[in-house]
Image 1 (cartoon, rainbow, N blue to C red):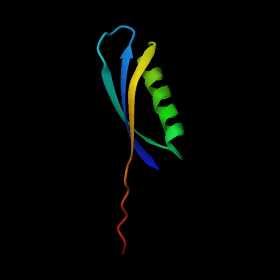
Image 2: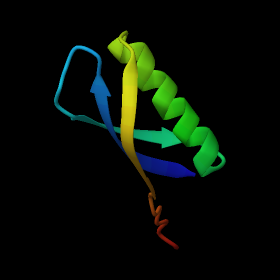
Image 3: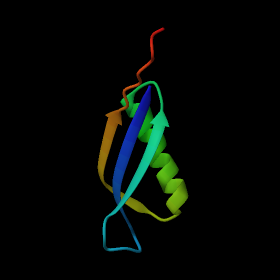
Length: 65
């Protein structure tokens, strides 16, 4: 299943809250959430505080012939 994720976070060097958007594929919400947070932490390379997390299931439509 495909998920759309929006993560609100704050890094140690910043006082403001930042937002990161990503799409991910996984079997369930928990595994997708863990993968997205791991990717964000690797990308920022600073200690992070996760403020909020929004995960939405993308609807996939297939055309029937």
